[in-house]
Structures are given as structure tokens and as C-alpha cells.
Amino acid sequence: DWCLAFVREGLLIFDPENGKQEAFYRWRAAINESVNAAWPVVRGNEIFISETYEIGSTLLRFEPGKLTPIWTDSDNRRDQSMRAHWSTPILIDGVLYGCSGRNEPDADIRAVNWSDGKVFWVHRTHARANVIAIGKQLIFADEFGVVQLIEPNSEKLTVRAEINLLEMANGSGKRGLIGTPSWAPPAFADGLLILRGDNRMVALQLGL
Image (cartoon, rainbow, N blue to C red; front, top):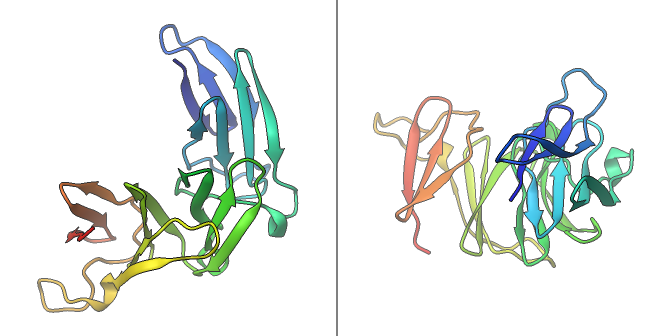
């Protein structure tokens, strides 16, 4: 067993029993405001890491003592597979689904092949979004209150349901169940999807 930490300078792997560093892979944009906020995604001994500021994503193979890149994004942001900001992509059946982009004008959601970084599809939303998996369904909740239930599909975006929390009345009779921006990741328990906005939380009953 190993512990992984995607720290400011890159991916750190250490032994949980004694804290000894086993491997480190530098992955950080050169600009001062860069941050590594999305968690690593792991499949077997392969580890995917991503950041949004300059360098994008890489898939690494871990062997005791070393990390070796399987594929790495180019320096051209337009050609990068995924630029995860603060939302960790979800891996389902060999496909990564996640939000890519630093700011709302250039943000999108996309599907990316795990093995080689090929982008299957891109849907421009112009809003950053969190994503969580419930079984094999995905919930995308963007920073402006739009919540989508998405069926994983590497061929196209398949939206099963969508609501806009800003268009719904709250307990005071005013529009907006939550305030924006909504950056906190959703939680799911006992059939309830819990979201937090700028000024309140809301629980939604999901009929899955």
C-alpha cells in the first residue's frame, strides 16, 4: 500500500508506515499562481494527474522507486487532453470524464481516453463544474447552479436530466436555491444529492 499526494510541486508517493518517500514526479506550471487541486486518479499501477494553468495532464506508470510517463500533454493548451482545475475527473470503463479549463469563458466538459489521452468529445459550457459518480451515472454541477445527470458515453454527450438551481424559488420565495459561485464538490448519501452554493446548501432527491 502506498499514499499519494499531489502537492504543489508534483506527485509524491510515500510509505504510509514510515513516511519514507518512494517516488516523486515534478508536475507544476511555472507561473506563480499555479495550484494542483484535482486529486490523482489511479488504475492499477497507473496514475493520472492534471492541472489547468499551463502543462495539463500526464499518465504515469508507478514501479517501486520510480514514476514513468505513459503519455504527456503538449505545451500547446489547445491540444491538451485535460486541464483539470479543482474538480477531479472520473474514470469509467477506460474513459475519463471531467471539466477542463481555468476560467468560465474557456471551460468545458469532455471525455478522454485513459490509455493515450485522446479526446473523444468536448462540450463547451463556459462554466467550471464539479463531477461525481453515482454508480455508473455522472453528476456535473457547475458554478452557476446548473446540475446535469450524464450517462457515460465515449461517443457523445448524453444528458439524461438537467435542472437550473438559480431558476428555482428558495424558502424565502426568491429565485435561486443556492447562491453563486458554487465551487464545493457535491456529496451523495441515502438518495440525496447535497450541493453547497455561496450562501446555503440544498439537498435534492434523485430518482435513479
